[in-house]
Length: 189
Image (cartoon, rainbow, N blue to C red; front, side, top):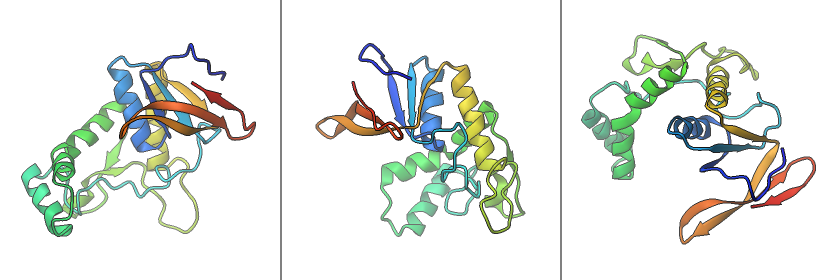
């Protein structure tokens, strides 16, 4: 893909792991033009989000618990060192995050009797040594989110890496350059 200064995106996402794809899909749902810059060249590549156990919990508590209780648990396990606003966001929004993922087509299973094992990605990972991630929960989740982004008109830049960000004070306002990992070609915006 050739980039030019005429190209315009409302959001440029660096990396197509769970955080990047969730941000890209959500922004696309709101009508934003989204570009995802991913250093993996193939649509399916190994990354931490694919090679995951797939458990969604808050400090080994069910994400469906009362947000006030979850906030208290976070405070306890971090001995008060957690950022209060971030802890409140996690405890208050965790259930909404998995509900949103379900609406995108991501599947969850119950993986045990413990309350915190209620939300595991499906199909579960294999309990054996080696990299057996293809077709497992994290891989299926990323494929599902990528398909959703495609359906919403998102744009991909695979095999590229963001090299420099445009900053206004402490705020990132966009990418300045990308480098193709094989051709070592740099494009400036």
